[in-house]
Length: 303
Image (cartoon, rainbow, N blue to C red; front, side):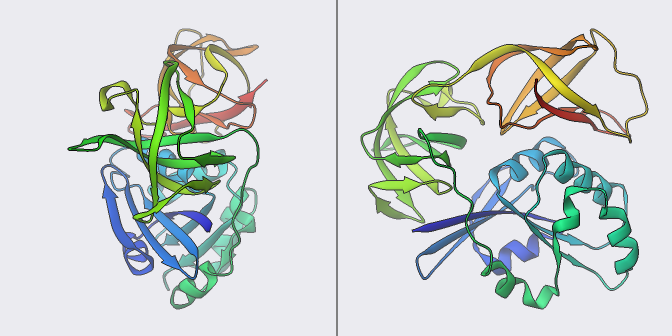
């Protein structure tokens, strides 16, 4: 079964038209199954009040659907977020008030320059032309929701970000290292025995309780856990202040949000208050959620 995951920005009505509403929190997930293909559409419900759900919704997705109704600071913030994460697969729609030439000029030096501009009425058809993006290797599952179900126990919702997950797999919960047995799985409410990247799954598990889990935790056979990182870092051109040692920010790594402190500016090193799971493929973004101006400080990768 094929799986594709989209982040929908600018208008949640698009997600309502493309899928059926499912899990709701500060992010809302819609999904639809057609002809053996499951498509999910994640909306950062709490954005723009909070910046964190925007990055988490984008990190769940391989593809972006972005409706631009007006060119305001929040549109700009979403453009900067997409570019910071290097998202290159996407569809753009816009209102009649937007000048297409002005929009293209805004996007030309960003990863959004490769997004296709389409008519809103043709979105469903365009979505169906997009192919899945999969990663092979040892299985990894990124968890985004977790709860207790009477008679079932701990249930985790997440995305198979690499490899293939199978019922009866025993994996580690990173960063705690606890053993987790996958008792059963569902995709789109249907029981399955295995799920291949980038499938979204619901898992009944043994070995942990919901209180042991945080959004962004990863199930894997092994993984690299860090408390200090050296980055190839690029400050956002829209962040005007200097970055100095001992300043504190939030670092976004996948779905993880970790408080951090600047240890050194050159080389650029950060210290995390709690360990994080990090791989060389990750894009790390520094955030200042409380800022009334620029909340995205800059981005980088492990040096």
